[in-house]
Length: 309
Image (cartoon, rainbow, N blue to C red):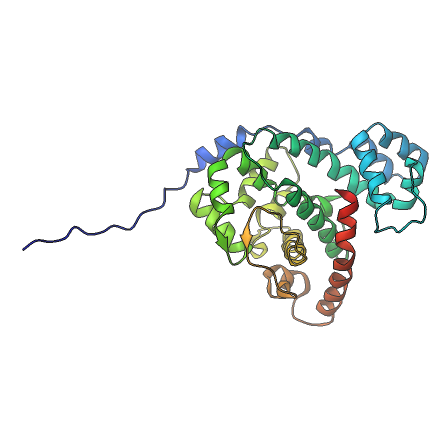
């Protein structure tokens, strides 16, 4: 009797070891902006005694920040009848909070853009910046409605940096990233699961490890590491929860980040997330107020991003 040889299903390549992943992350260039985040300007805008003229003078030293500032103040979002060409006037119209956000986002994005030059092939970087900044804006607004007291810019930075692991993957795991970009997934959590199957770590863990090497705060590291599953965060769950909700809301608006083939997020799908339950508990008055606030933010978000990028 002749027995047919068994047909073996093709096996996926084994993921990399922790040691290999860590070594590849270490090889990625460090970003000076993550350690300074425009200290001179940051100190000025935090001071009650600072004059608009002093803030404008610091901004003038940075051509890229100046350009973004004028582009934002002259965007449709502000609806000014006459064009603003003066930095000091722009500071007056924007206010200190948005100046701080611009001053953080600009150097980080510029350095990440330099990092991408070492990556072969075209990738949707502008989509990633739009998603990151949109998530940062919404994360800050979500956390502002919680009892959490934040006296620095952590609430903005956790949203801005939550997908930094994607940039590191483009540098350290380019072939795997391109494969993942072509693989559909129902949800962001499912996509992260496929990252772990192919590489060994997902972009959240990779990003958190990269940021740890820059000596960023524990709040930022936990928020980035657990933004897809905030209920697993050992500490600082509110930060991770706010990023998860903001990420989904921004995706719903069509600002997906461009690095994943994830199914569209339906309206109010975020109320079923673990992050929503951590932030607002059951579907009571706080949850209803949060829904209304998010709906209002969604109306403003596209024009705000248009002025920033």
